[in-house]
Amino acid sequence: MRRKLWLMAFFLITLILFSPPFLVAAEVKIGVLYPMSGPTAQVGLDNKHAIELALEIINTTNYKHLNLPLAKSGGLSNLGNANVSVSIADHQGKPDLGLSEAERLITQEKVIALFGAYHSAVTETASLVAERLKIPFFNAESSSPKLTRRGFKWFFRSSPHDEIFAGSLFECLIGLGHED
Image: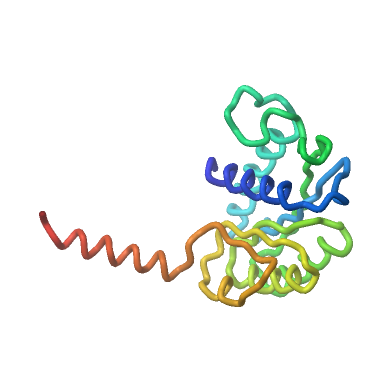
């Protein structure tokens, strides 16, 4: 959960640093895509709780005693102390639903960025919408290598892909076979 908080903080800091001046508002709304129902709903619920804690740390001064990014000011100081809010969408692990929910979050909920997805197949379809509409999509979990090989300008991933995981596993296994 601590990793999720750091990732969310990194995402928000990046968003703040590279936001155009016209984004100064009372609220910064981010769309969050996770499976909130279905067989992988627990992943979505765990992430929802981590995001809620991150929002409390960012939007209040209750945690200013902690040495965490964005914990001291009560909002986003570079954006006039604007609060961060999220709109969470349930994609149920279905790529087609992820695509339609991403489009709804951007066009109807007016989010300025998307976060999450978890399933690589959902990330693939949802990020297509974000790329087309020029909205940043930050992903912390999906591990398919092709997600970053597409050359999208608006897609960002903070975790390794499957080939890196596999390579590291084999390096470990080889290392276990060699006694020093």
